[in-house]
Amino acid sequence: MSTMLSSREARRLTHPGGSGMLAVMMTPMCLVFLLRDTPGGQEVLLGLKQRGFGTGRIVGIGGHVEPGETDLEAGVRETFEETGLRVAPADLYDAGRVVFRFPASPGTDMSVALYRTTTWTGELVASDELDPQWHPVAALPTDRMWDDSRIWLPHVLRGELIDADITYDRSGSLVAQVSLIVLPDPKPARSTISR
Ligand SMILES: Nc1[nH]c(=O)nc2c1ncn2[C@H]1C[C@H](O)[C@@H](COP(=O)(O)OP(=O)(O)OP(=O)(O)O)O1
Image (cartoon, rainbow, N blue to C red):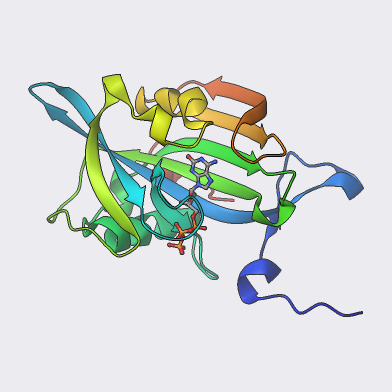
């Protein structure tokens, strides 16, 4: 039996953490966290997902890395598509990577490049995919986010560089296993090799 792969499936990659025959195929994704200072404290731009995977949850800004794109280019494009805001590649800071594994549906496993920035231009607009909203960093809406967010997102928002690997339970709604490495000294994303 032969299987046709979509272009997106065909370019799924093997996460470097995988080993030999047991390596898991991952879909490359990106998430970008815009941070601003307000009199009430620091805020982060998140979005209420209107369609697709995770509809109804509050999620980070981002999406698929398309064929021919670097993770960084995808971060710039997705930010504009989902928020109307323009970020320059040089203003995105590498915040590391998180892998999400869903044992009940391995086809949805993803390897997500993480970026952070405090610099952008333009006016915030909602898309049909995401309704972007500012949230206090000190009071993240974790009860409306993916269960994993409470584990790794505070590190990213503090300015740390992470390498995380999250496995969900069979229900796909609760985190079952976590590996989280926090690395010091993040660099501007343009100075790193994207994959
Ligand atoms: N466990 C998880 N924790 C988390 O914080 N974000 C997750 C997540 N699982 C998926 N995401 C994010 C990554 C990605 O931005 C999005 C995946 O949703 P979709 O498959 O609908 O892709 P998108 O519609 O965002 O991508 P594009 O179609 O390329 O815009 O949700």
